[in-house]
Length: 270
Image 1 (cartoon, one colour):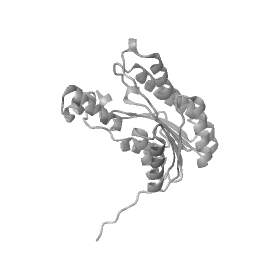
Image 2 (cartoon, helix red, strand yellow):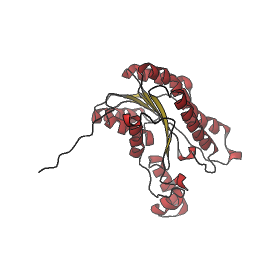
Image 3 (cartoon, rainbow, N blue to C red):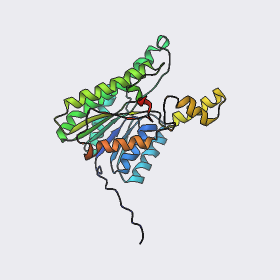
Image 4 (tube, helix red, strand yellow):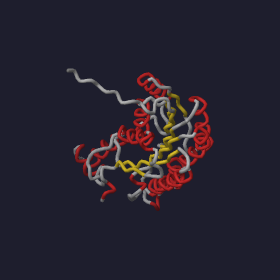
């Protein structure tokens, strides 16, 4: 008797999501998982206009969902407010907000450029606040909503030379808890995800650079340099972060709010 494939019901089909920083990396992985579930998307991020348009077209065609794009600069509150209102106008609602946009700079604290500190705090932390502030009245009116903040393992532990990033990601977890408490008597939840090292084009480039700099084979660079702090010496895949977002948006997660979920290969188990 032939094996029958059982299709998983798309319980999120018809929902509308905005994922910041979603033209590449983790954000794009999240966007793909949501699109596969039948969720309409607003993408956001930097890149060449023609490449972003091609990405928008491919996602829409492959998954049969509506996909729009916002070029909003996450360091500018006015851009963020406009992005939220435009997404609501274009899709009719905004049910899922994923705050993912982020930047990084590595330096000793005494040499850390002040402009880099300000930019990291603005994009990695303050942009989450501005987006949440703008969308919560709409979600309350709709009577449902999911807010997911992509923090980092560095929201829980620190590393040297990353003072701004660590401070911002710790702040994201505090913001998540506070918002969750404020919305506890509604059907809106707010949670955070804390990834370890995720396989992205940026990390792939770092592997090649480190291999050249240290004159080491690629696999040794991955285990001994990039993933030195991560006991499970495997990169997390962007789709795994997307799967966590998908679960936290599902009815099975109705009672989960104000929580942080590590996807870190055992990093914080030490």
